[in-house]
Length: 330
Ligand SMILES: Nc1ncnc2c1ncn2[C@@H]1O[C@H](COP(=O)(O)OP(=O)(O)OP(=O)(O)O)[C@@H](O)[C@H]1O
Ligand SMILES: [Mg+2]
Image 1 (cartoon, rainbow, N blue to C red):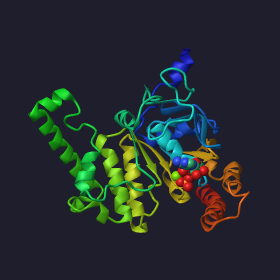
Image 2: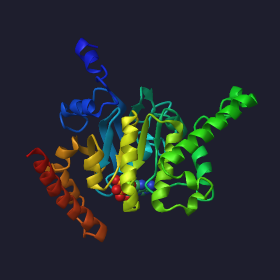
Image 3: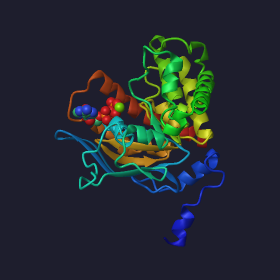
Image 4: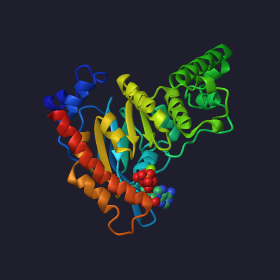
């Protein structure tokens, strides 16, 4: 490796805690799909997923910057959730590598090669995700849901499992951590309630809190705002930014463009399975290619209500964001 290449991997000053330093670094990057980051936490190469004749995901190369909030946006059916499923081991690429032969899909997280690992190993490597439709277990209490999120459960390690004082200590630690997180997410008063009795927004918070039980290096949120009552949205935004400020990398899928613009440091745009653009939120979200991708997703079919809202919304939002930027820079 050349000196220059080694230097370019050196950590950013104040990084990853100093948002300004991180943003300044991101501003130096070319805004093209697949652009290399100084210190990517996740690197993906040639990952494909086909369902019958349809290609849901076909990502040639993508690097997710460490310590940043990255938004993954794109029209309905672009492949965002499928992409999450693939890299977290909940689904396998069509071009998956096998022990012998197979395809050439490859991705690594925090320096660990994940091409042949399943969901629990991905989580153990420090990458956890939430689901578009919440998967809170409704017939368990809120606290029990939290304890499932801990990845250091006693018994997992045979030596720890054999020595009661060790696992009892672990269990106490897990309960402590669960309680701390529930307090942080203002769910502490509900810890003995059945998760099924929570509101939609509270279930989203519970899922996020549960994902944090294992202290992940990166949290992946699939539409954290969907179904959340407006009274809770600000607190969700604050939680996500607080995570980044503590050094957790955040990758989230979201259709709420205001949220994307206000909290993300970097935006990746998918359409028809491919990454078609990436860049700074204020630039990429107003780019013609992105507006076209939202429009193009519908050019060959009648618009349903949701699609019409999505398309009209994207156009309106691009104009609105452009105005906002102009105002801020005046
Ligand atoms: N299990 C499956 N079987 C068949 N097709 C699937 C399956 N899962 C996803 N697809 C298809 O793959 C494409 C990508 O879907 P995906 O759910 O990843 O999109 P998305 O970007 O998350 O969309 P949305 O914004 O609506 O959540 C869609 O055309 C979808 O119908
Ligand atoms: Mg989805």
